[in-house]
Image 1 (cartoon, rainbow, N blue to C red):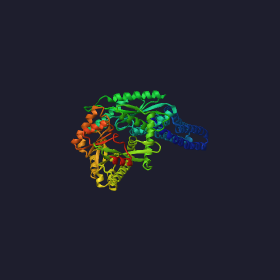
Image 2: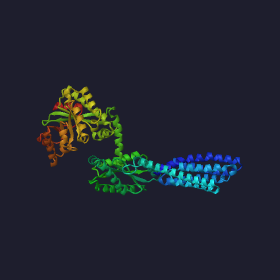
Image 3: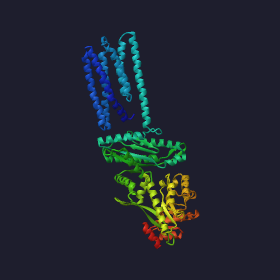
Image 4: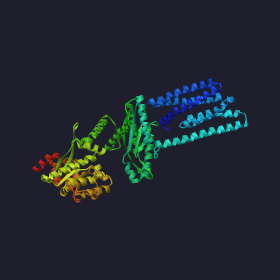
Length: 616
């Protein structure tokens, strides 16, 4: 049983013990007064009162103070002495009254001794160091008393008392084992035997209280295995489980014996370090341990004839007395860990002040974004798409957010935040509705383009109401001919999901006349099999390839290959990020269909786009 639970349980028994002593003790004073022997009972009861006051102080000390681990150990010693003192007092009342057979008080003393033994075996079951000695201390004098009677019934009672003592100890030990087993299951991971998330959270809260009292430092290592899902999916969960057990064993070998290792779930593990006197020492120990763990986890694993290789990404968060929120610390380590993944995995990132400022800024952006549409801060701009002759044939709708506090906030900052928080659903619908309405107005004003591109996020695409929203907005704003101009741009990451579900959603949307384009093509999950299966009509060459066309031979080869492949699949190609005449000339020589970029025009407002269209 972990110490905090152990201490808390025994702490709660203090008032019970006091009540079971103070009130029955008054009965002894009354009985002794009736028979003219009050002094011994009064002296004994005074001892009960003094020990009760001591127990109250021990009780309050646990409640009123965030005790450090060192203080808790000292507190537990006081608590143990308190319980021993109480049961010794009950033993003394037995010894004081057992000889008073002329008043029949010895029967009450015998019953009291048995009752006190029962109380010890029931209230103190979490701690064998308390219940077993106290039961023995209380029952052995009773056994001796029965034996010294010198009559046959005394010997029988001595035997019965011995059996009762054994039963009380046996019952208490059985309950103790059951309590330990229940507590173990509640606090341990069944697969690896490590502590689980529930225990870790409580442990971390207690550690923060200890750090605050001692003004020391500790650290948190959040360890996430890289590409573990691939092993699970390809080799099965049995192999994955064996691998997790081996990982747990390797990390255990690397950490300090007194530090905590827990499994948070899946392939996530966490290590909580020891306490250090200063931040630099703590940082050095955390970095050294993280480096050792990275190295040991990369060594090959042999699991049922499979040779497996994995790596890990580790986020580090330092813990001090200033921290008082376990969830925040975990989130910091989580942010650092994902930063390690974004930087190529198999690395260690320490959560620092710069990252903290970025997180706080992102939290503020998240809150402000929630009200941005109601405050009319979100708008659309439109980047022209031209053919090889310089004629405007299309436009891409791009979202802009002009916040009253931070000014213009670019999509590459707030769109990922909207994706993570789910606000992309509302934002995406607003963008789609605004774009549909704009295209409808353009049609009425004689601006006839071939296509009108709108970005659709993956989370928005898989939202259960997405197709119904598209259908409803089409009905409200677009004619049949206008619908055929709409192109939904999706990124290649969409194919990492359930491909059959993706195709089903695409087909439903295509039934409305809307086409699909694969955005940022060549940067993610590109595959000929996907191009063959997905009902897409267009691919967009990512700007990272276009920007290096006049510098890198490899990018020229890549772009040429994409264009050749598109011809084979009868797909339209849009090159985005065209910024120079040389890039335009190369793409035109390879017969790219549509061009988009600053070489032609920056993104324009509605009015500016109309003027640009008319001038071309």
